[in-house]
Image (cartoon, rainbow, N blue to C red; front, side, top):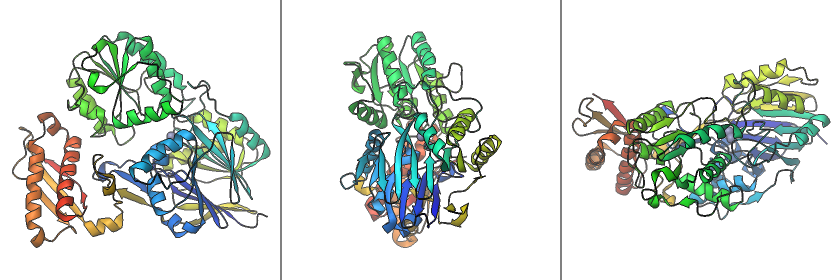
Length: 556
Ligand SMILES: [Zn+2]
Ligand SMILES: [Zn+2]
């Protein structure tokens, strides 16, 4: 029966943070687990998202049978539209996960033809030679699952992201029993989340944030604004419950905050008491001491609701001295500068800003610390172990943690980078060949652009449409720009025919600078985003092309 080999093909998320994507292949059948994106790092300013290179899947498109999603975080579902645009494969996930990815598919006009199949935890699917069972786990998002995949060579367990929360706020417990049963019967390969392997002990339960949130509301006499990930339904539920206890009306600000709460509410995952919600336009007329604002934009994303509020550029709300702003979220590595800049602005406006680590915590992680990782290893007792979801140092640490456990049967642990495959056959497991992988930058423009304009800005497009660098010199003392902005372009338009367009483009950038407030002008993240949006609108209109635009701001 098992005369073929099983190939484990990491396409993203190993040796890098984000864009998790793993393919499993047995003979002529491939299933893909998760299809995530990565947020661009500082040096990639000018692109919106980064997704895995799908060359391997495109080269074997006839063999790809399914995309299975473990949960609805962007680093697991964010690239789904880009894969489905390339190939029409059925997608499986829990109801909430599919609702979140459906929202992304809608933005790309792919929703109507996507084949989304809801699977409940505890249910099994048959896909070619694979039988896949969804196992409920606890994580910072609701409806997250691990996968037990029975193959002709044995069982493969993929944990997805998880922590072991013994007291989840929705009382939906981690199904450790099922995991342990698989362990008892014998597991060929365990792939487990390495994100928090550096942390000793146990990750706190989601409930641990309640005392701090309660304390914040207890002490505040003015407006309270709390930022968290819109997908943290557990967190939102606790906040809405507290708002009711403290007799505050709740206002949701930010696009993702509004849509995700709507989805969670419609699926019965978020309980919202009658008449507790107020509209953003009613905020200023509601007593400040009677309102709680839940807002998106914890990572200092330049156009998010919280960033706009920080520079006093939100149409429904202004920060006033005495207001409390809490960031109930973690600082994703790479976003420190943007977040601290936003906090500086908020503090300058007189807000009491609560962020960072404290006891009791204002935020708890959704990922397992080392003791929980050991628990999972001990329960599953795999023959082979493959740490996933993390930079190389975290994968290596997770491997050494497994090496120190004494459960019987672990034959080998593999620390692999994305692209390095693992092969298992009846003789055992070994490193296999490499497959092409990489990061593909997508420049989808600003959110207010029409959907048809979304263009996959992969390398081919980049070479076709070129790159445009608007260069702005800002005087350190006056905060004003020095002379007319410069524009450098490569591969976009020839100097001759483009002279007029490029000259006018300089005026466009100059107008963007002039029309910005003094406060916006000190925030380079905001300025770059504004310049990019205005310039793109102009260039697309003039040339019907979409070059990659990367604003450069120099302080002189
Ligand atoms: Zn993740
Ligand atoms: Zn996650």
